[in-house]
Length: 192
Image (cartoon, rainbow, N blue to C red):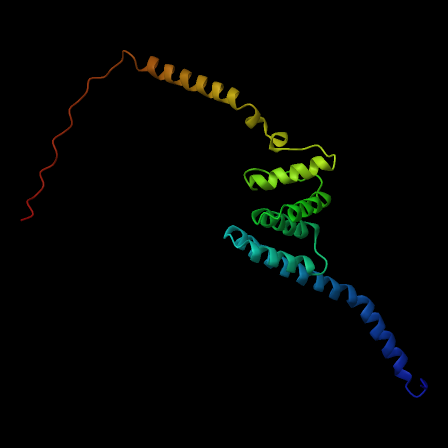
C-alpha cells in the first residue's frame, strides 16, 4: 500500500492507536464492573434460594458467578461462603471442605460467628483452619470487655439498683402525706 497517496492515513492511524491506548483500560474496567454487578446479583439470588431451602439453585447461581471474569476478593469470598454453606446443606462434605479451603486461602483471618453462620459451617471452617496448622479462632477471641465481664456488670448493676431502692425507701419512709379523696366526677348530661 502506498501511504503517499493517503497523507492523512498515518495521522488517523496514530489518533486511533492513541485513543485505543487511553480507552482500553476504561472499557476493561467497565467490563469488570459489569461482571461484578452480575455476580453481586447472582450472590443475592443464591442467598435467597439458600434461605428458602433451594440449595441446588443457590449452587448453580454461585457457579455462574464464579465462572465470570475478574471479581473483587470480597465478592469472591461472599460467593464461596454461600457455596460452602449450600454444599453442607446438601451434605456434600468433600465439596464443602474444598470450598472452605479456598475461603481460608482468600481470607486467612476469617472467623465465622454463631450469630451469622450455621454451626456446621463454623465447625468445617475451624477444621480446615486446624488442618492447615492455623490456630482455631472462635468468637471468644473477639469478645468485647462487656461480654467478658458479664457477671461483674450484673453484680455492679444489681448493687446500684439496691442502693437506689434503699435511697428511695429511706427518703419516703416516715414522711407520709395525708391522702385526699378524689373529687366527685362531673355530672354528665343525659343523652336520651
